[in-house]
Amino acid sequence: MSSTLSTDPSLGLLRSLTENALDPDYEVHAHSQRTREQVAKENSPRGRLIAGAVLVVASALVVGGAMGLERANSGVRTQAEQLRTKAQLGLVATDDKSAQVQELRSSIQSLSRTKSLAAPQSASVASAAGVAPLEGPGLSVTLSDATSTTGRSASDTQLGQVLDADVQGVVNALWAAGAQGIAVNGQRITSLSAIRSAGDAILVNYRPLNPPYVVEAVGNSEQIRSRFNDSGVAQDLRTAAKNYGLGLTTSTIDSLRLAPANAVLRYATSIPGTEKNS
Picture 1: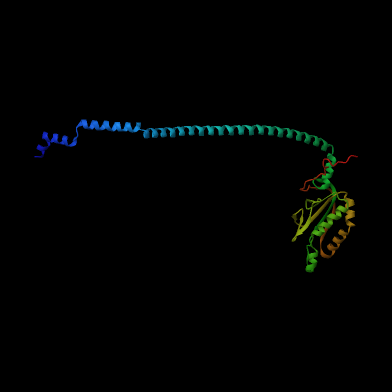
Picture 2 (picture 1 turned 180 degrees about the vertical axis):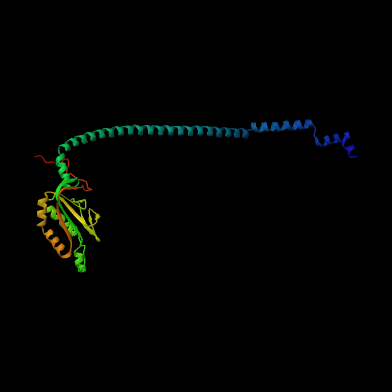
């Protein structure tokens, strides 16, 4: 029965009438009516205003973008000009520095020629100041702590130890005896040297030394030995050696070499404009 209904031609007509209730001419007329209404809206003053506003906004966006691009290009050109100016100034400064370097080199060469004429005097001053090696005959004085404490009291044992004052006394006595240069355990003595104690250690040039303490002096060995032995320092040390066992030995040496001190030699110079006309 169902197959009979599906193949019935009258059912197709009914379905077509149901789905297409309106006549095709009515549908065409409705479509044309909607098109005319859209055209009328677009041609109305309100539509023209909207279209104009859209055009204005679009134009503003285009003009704004162009102006922004122009400003960006202008900034790039300004930075390029600034960099070019800095580069030119840097070249000028480099040329000035090069000229100053050449002038300084000329001055150094001139001073070197002048100092070469006074080299012997400079070497003598450097040796006397202790910043240059010094070689020659001289005297060696060795101080050491007492080795035996048998039968000695605590105070006597302490008096048998070498103190910083003992080393200072020997150095000063050797200077007074005519020494040209002095070193203690290899530490060159200069006008800036300090001989001090830190606890049980003796410091020379702020370096701790280990006993025995060997004081070497370059100069006329016989003269230095004679004058040192006659000094009050030597007499006190001999007394300490006899009574408390302090070690004291002196010996002349044909050739001594004193190493330079770790110091910088400074020269006095006149200040420009302060010279007095003779």
